[in-house]
Image (cartoon, rainbow, N blue to C red; front, side, top):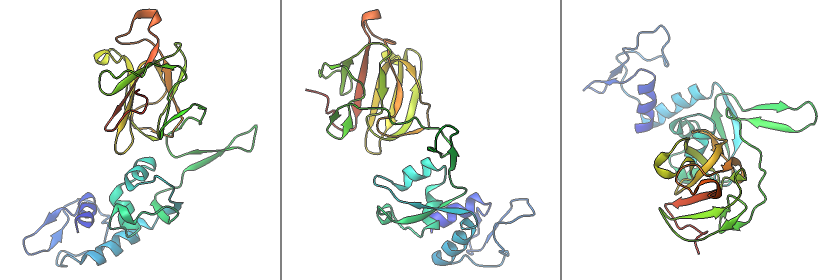
Length: 253
Protein backbone atom coordinates (compact mmCIF):
# COMPACT_ATOMS: atom_id res chain seq x y z
CA UNK A 1 0.00 0.00 0.00
CA UNK A 2 3.05 2.25 -0.17
CA UNK A 3 2.14 3.85 -3.48
CA UNK A 4 -1.43 4.53 -2.43
CA UNK A 5 -0.31 6.05 0.86
CA UNK A 6 2.23 8.22 -0.95
CA UNK A 7 -0.52 9.53 -3.20
CA UNK A 8 -2.80 10.26 -0.23
CA UNK A 9 0.07 12.00 1.54
CA UNK A 10 0.55 14.32 -1.43
CA UNK A 11 -3.16 15.14 -1.28
CA UNK A 12 -3.02 16.03 2.41
CA UNK A 13 -4.00 12.71 4.00
CA UNK A 14 -0.69 12.22 5.76
CA UNK A 15 -1.75 11.83 9.41
CA UNK A 16 -2.40 8.19 10.27
CA UNK A 17 -3.74 7.35 13.75
CA UNK A 18 -2.88 4.31 15.81
CA UNK A 19 -6.41 2.90 15.37
CA UNK A 20 -5.94 2.77 11.57
CA UNK A 21 -8.19 5.76 10.96
CA UNK A 22 -6.95 8.69 8.93
CA UNK A 23 -7.85 12.32 8.54
CA UNK A 24 -6.66 15.40 6.67
CA UNK A 25 -5.61 18.66 8.26
CA UNK A 26 -5.23 20.32 4.86
CA UNK A 27 -7.23 23.55 5.22
CA UNK A 28 -9.23 23.68 2.04
CA UNK A 29 -12.84 23.43 0.99
CA UNK A 30 -11.92 20.94 -1.72
CA UNK A 31 -10.97 17.44 -0.58
CA UNK A 32 -9.61 14.77 -2.94
CA UNK A 33 -12.07 12.10 -1.80
CA UNK A 34 -15.37 11.98 0.05
CA UNK A 35 -13.90 10.44 3.22
CA UNK A 36 -15.13 11.02 6.76
CA UNK A 37 -12.94 10.93 9.84
CA UNK A 38 -14.48 7.70 11.07
CA UNK A 39 -13.87 5.64 7.95
CA UNK A 40 -11.19 3.00 8.24
CA UNK A 41 -8.32 2.69 5.79
CA UNK A 42 -9.46 0.80 2.73
CA UNK A 43 -7.79 -2.19 1.17
CA UNK A 44 -5.06 -1.75 -1.44
CA UNK A 45 -7.49 -2.69 -4.21
CA UNK A 46 -10.09 -0.15 -3.07
CA UNK A 47 -7.50 2.60 -2.82
CA UNK A 48 -6.16 1.81 -6.27
CA UNK A 49 -9.67 2.00 -7.70
CA UNK A 50 -10.41 5.39 -6.14
CA UNK A 51 -7.06 6.89 -7.10
CA UNK A 52 -7.35 5.44 -10.61
CA UNK A 53 -10.75 7.08 -11.00
CA UNK A 54 -9.27 10.40 -9.91
CA UNK A 55 -6.38 10.13 -12.37
CA UNK A 56 -8.74 9.00 -15.14
CA UNK A 57 -10.42 12.40 -15.08
CA UNK A 58 -7.83 13.72 -17.56
CA UNK A 59 -5.71 11.16 -19.43
CA UNK A 60 -4.52 10.26 -22.91
CA UNK A 61 -3.43 7.00 -24.52
CA UNK A 62 0.19 6.11 -25.27
CA UNK A 63 1.67 3.05 -26.99
CA UNK A 64 4.78 1.74 -25.23
CA UNK A 65 7.91 1.89 -27.39
CA UNK A 66 11.08 -0.17 -27.21
CA UNK A 67 13.29 1.09 -24.41
CA UNK A 68 10.46 2.80 -22.53
CA UNK A 69 10.53 2.48 -18.76
CA UNK A 70 8.27 3.89 -16.07
CA UNK A 71 11.10 6.22 -15.07
CA UNK A 72 11.75 7.43 -18.62
CA UNK A 73 8.05 7.99 -19.27
CA UNK A 74 7.65 9.90 -16.01
CA UNK A 75 10.48 12.24 -17.01
CA UNK A 76 9.39 12.51 -20.63
CA UNK A 77 5.81 13.48 -19.84
CA UNK A 78 6.39 15.20 -16.48
CA UNK A 79 4.30 12.78 -14.42
CA UNK A 80 5.02 10.68 -11.34
CA UNK A 81 6.01 7.01 -11.60
CA UNK A 82 3.50 6.03 -8.91
CA UNK A 83 0.70 7.77 -10.83
CA UNK A 84 1.56 5.76 -13.96
CA UNK A 85 1.53 2.53 -11.95
CA UNK A 86 -1.75 3.31 -10.22
CA UNK A 87 -3.52 4.51 -13.34
CA UNK A 88 -2.49 1.44 -15.35
CA UNK A 89 -2.70 -1.05 -12.47
CA UNK A 90 0.99 -1.92 -12.79
CA UNK A 91 2.61 -3.62 -9.82
CA UNK A 92 6.18 -3.56 -11.17
CA UNK A 93 8.40 -2.37 -14.03
CA UNK A 94 8.25 -5.84 -15.61
CA UNK A 95 4.56 -5.40 -16.45
CA UNK A 96 5.37 -2.54 -18.85
CA UNK A 97 5.62 -4.35 -22.20
CA UNK A 98 6.53 -3.11 -25.68
CA UNK A 99 3.42 -2.44 -27.76
CA UNK A 100 0.93 -2.22 -24.89
CA UNK A 101 -1.31 0.82 -24.57
CA UNK A 102 -1.22 2.75 -21.31
CA UNK A 103 -2.85 5.89 -20.02
CA UNK A 104 -0.81 9.01 -19.23
CA UNK A 105 -2.21 11.54 -16.71
CA UNK A 106 -2.75 15.09 -17.90
CA UNK A 107 -2.93 16.57 -21.37
CA UNK A 108 -1.33 14.95 -24.46
CA UNK A 109 1.75 16.56 -26.10
CA UNK A 110 0.99 19.45 -28.40
CA UNK A 111 1.29 18.86 -32.16
CA UNK A 112 2.37 21.93 -34.09
CA UNK A 113 1.74 22.15 -37.84
CA UNK A 114 4.47 24.07 -39.67
CA UNK A 115 3.46 26.69 -42.24
CA UNK A 116 5.82 25.68 -45.05
CA UNK A 117 5.19 21.96 -44.93
CA UNK A 118 2.87 19.35 -43.52
CA UNK A 119 5.56 18.11 -41.14
CA UNK A 120 4.36 17.67 -37.57
CA UNK A 121 6.58 18.51 -34.64
CA UNK A 122 5.80 16.88 -31.29
CA UNK A 123 6.55 19.06 -28.28
CA UNK A 124 6.15 17.21 -24.95
CA UNK A 125 6.99 20.29 -22.91
CA UNK A 126 10.67 20.54 -23.83
CA UNK A 127 11.83 21.14 -27.40
CA UNK A 128 14.10 18.39 -28.63
CA UNK A 129 16.54 18.75 -31.50
CA UNK A 130 16.01 16.89 -34.72
CA UNK A 131 18.04 13.77 -35.50
CA UNK A 132 20.86 15.05 -37.69
CA UNK A 133 23.68 12.58 -37.13
CA UNK A 134 24.94 10.13 -39.73
CA UNK A 135 27.91 8.78 -37.82
CA UNK A 136 29.36 5.32 -37.28
CA UNK A 137 28.34 3.00 -34.46
CA UNK A 138 30.59 1.62 -31.75
CA UNK A 139 28.64 -1.32 -30.40
CA UNK A 140 25.27 0.06 -29.32
CA UNK A 141 26.63 3.60 -29.02
CA UNK A 142 26.83 6.25 -31.69
CA UNK A 143 30.31 7.73 -32.11
CA UNK A 144 29.44 11.26 -30.94
CA UNK A 145 31.60 13.25 -33.34
CA UNK A 146 33.30 12.87 -36.71
CA UNK A 147 37.05 12.90 -36.15
CA UNK A 148 40.15 10.88 -35.26
CA UNK A 149 39.69 8.62 -32.24
CA UNK A 150 42.94 8.29 -30.31
CA UNK A 151 41.43 5.31 -28.49
CA UNK A 152 43.78 5.65 -25.51
CA UNK A 153 42.19 5.23 -22.10
CA UNK A 154 42.69 8.06 -19.65
CA UNK A 155 40.78 9.68 -16.84
CA UNK A 156 37.55 7.89 -16.03
CA UNK A 157 37.25 5.35 -18.87
CA UNK A 158 37.65 8.11 -21.45
CA UNK A 159 39.11 8.65 -24.90
CA UNK A 160 39.83 11.80 -26.92
CA UNK A 161 38.45 12.32 -30.42
CA UNK A 162 40.35 14.97 -32.40
CA UNK A 163 38.03 17.20 -34.44
CA UNK A 164 37.93 20.85 -35.55
CA UNK A 165 36.48 23.37 -33.13
CA UNK A 166 32.83 23.88 -34.01
CA UNK A 167 32.25 20.30 -35.18
CA UNK A 168 28.78 19.07 -34.06
CA UNK A 169 28.63 16.65 -31.12
CA UNK A 170 25.74 14.18 -30.85
CA UNK A 171 24.25 12.06 -28.06
CA UNK A 172 25.74 8.56 -28.15
CA UNK A 173 22.53 7.09 -26.73
CA UNK A 174 19.11 8.32 -25.70
CA UNK A 175 18.78 9.52 -22.12
CA UNK A 176 18.44 12.45 -19.77
CA UNK A 177 20.81 15.40 -19.50
CA UNK A 178 21.82 15.42 -15.84
CA UNK A 179 24.69 17.93 -16.12
CA UNK A 180 25.16 20.77 -18.61
CA UNK A 181 27.61 23.41 -17.41
CA UNK A 182 30.06 26.03 -18.63
CA UNK A 183 33.34 26.88 -16.93
CA UNK A 184 36.52 25.12 -15.84
CA UNK A 185 34.74 22.21 -14.12
CA UNK A 186 37.88 20.43 -12.97
CA UNK A 187 39.41 20.57 -16.45
CA UNK A 188 36.40 19.32 -18.40
CA UNK A 189 35.57 22.84 -19.52
CA UNK A 190 32.07 23.23 -20.90
CA UNK A 191 30.61 19.75 -20.62
CA UNK A 192 27.46 17.62 -20.75
CA UNK A 193 26.59 14.37 -18.96
CA UNK A 194 23.74 12.15 -20.18
CA UNK A 195 22.27 9.36 -18.04
CA UNK A 196 21.18 6.20 -19.90
CA UNK A 197 19.50 4.11 -17.15
CA UNK A 198 22.45 1.84 -16.33
CA UNK A 199 25.36 4.05 -17.37
CA UNK A 200 26.24 7.60 -18.34
CA UNK A 201 28.28 9.38 -21.02
CA UNK A 202 30.26 12.60 -20.63
CA UNK A 203 31.20 15.07 -23.36
CA UNK A 204 33.97 17.52 -22.41
CA UNK A 205 35.81 20.60 -23.76
CA UNK A 206 32.75 21.82 -25.70
CA UNK A 207 32.76 25.28 -27.23
CA UNK A 208 28.97 25.51 -26.92
CA UNK A 209 26.26 23.42 -25.28
CA UNK A 210 22.85 23.09 -26.97
CA UNK A 211 21.01 21.15 -24.24
CA UNK A 212 20.08 21.96 -20.67
CA UNK A 213 19.76 19.84 -17.52
CA UNK A 214 16.51 17.89 -17.38
CA UNK A 215 16.08 17.52 -21.14
CA UNK A 216 15.44 14.13 -22.71
CA UNK A 217 17.53 13.52 -25.83
CA UNK A 218 17.32 10.85 -28.48
CA UNK A 219 20.32 8.98 -29.86
CA UNK A 220 21.93 11.27 -32.44
CA UNK A 221 20.46 14.53 -31.14
CA UNK A 222 22.75 17.55 -31.28
CA UNK A 223 24.05 18.36 -27.79
CA UNK A 224 26.92 20.78 -28.50
CA UNK A 225 30.02 21.63 -30.51
CA UNK A 226 33.68 20.63 -30.24
CA UNK A 227 35.88 23.16 -28.48
CA UNK A 228 39.03 23.55 -26.41
CA UNK A 229 37.60 24.77 -23.11
CA UNK A 230 39.03 23.46 -19.85
CA UNK A 231 42.36 21.65 -19.75
CA UNK A 232 43.49 21.49 -23.39
CA UNK A 233 46.50 22.65 -25.40
CA UNK A 234 45.32 26.03 -26.59
CA UNK A 235 44.06 26.64 -30.13
CA UNK A 236 45.44 23.30 -31.36
CA UNK A 237 43.68 21.35 -28.62
CA UNK A 238 40.26 21.15 -30.25
CA UNK A 239 38.86 17.72 -29.41
CA UNK A 240 36.02 15.89 -27.65
CA UNK A 241 36.73 14.21 -24.33
CA UNK A 242 34.31 11.25 -24.30
CA UNK A 243 33.75 9.24 -21.11
CA UNK A 244 31.56 6.23 -20.43
CA UNK A 245 30.84 5.51 -16.78
CA UNK A 246 29.15 2.37 -15.49
CA UNK A 247 30.15 0.11 -18.39
CA UNK A 248 32.93 -0.39 -20.96
CA UNK A 249 33.79 2.33 -23.45
CA UNK A 250 33.56 0.78 -26.96
CA UNK A 251 35.75 3.55 -28.40
CA UNK A 252 38.80 2.39 -26.44
CA UNK A 253 41.28 0.32 -28.43
